[in-house]
Image 1 (cartoon, rainbow, N blue to C red):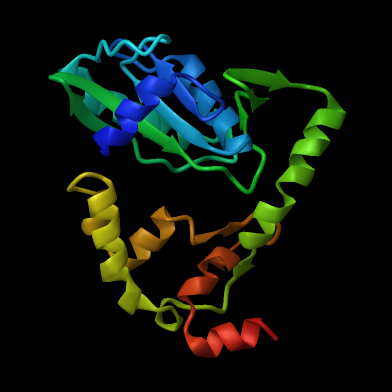
Image 2 (image 1 turned 120 degrees about the horizontal axis):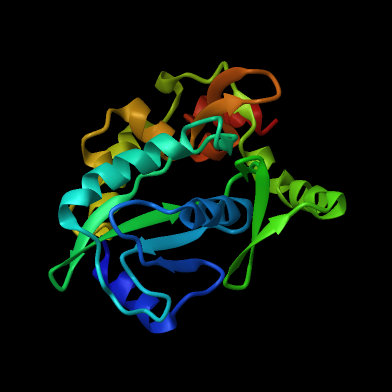
Length: 225
């Protein structure tokens, strides 16, 4: 965890891309609403164990691992989220207090939580029900969706895997000395980075257009034609 980034968030306060949650020993429903709204807008960072005014109160240290486990289970549950999400909450320490950081990237799809769509407006998670507003959200996602188009014939061997050691080092440095990507296999790392996914239109799995920069010269030339 980059503590400098966290301290900067405390100074700035809650914004369209920063959310503080008090949290006890469980993760409340409003946290999942924020995950949904961040995914549907421009992404953001959630910090569990912080009051709305930026006061760090922490969470029970012994409860943190189960909170992370339950969070991952919830966002991967199709009865709660549609489409489901894969995020990696991070437990960290700040001034002897335990906190959890959840980075939520902007998604190429429109997500719902408990069959309700949420959007981020200023510092609030807003429930969207008007058909016109929902249509606007889908239009806004078109550019991102294009980057996530799946190319099922591109294989792992066709990518610039020689770049991954550098990626692991950068991730480690940006995370303050430790990052999950250090231990993941090449394939799992690419999945974690959102470069391998399912095309919901065809049901096929594969590398998407966002992985273009990793493709070998042979494939880059072919797909740029």
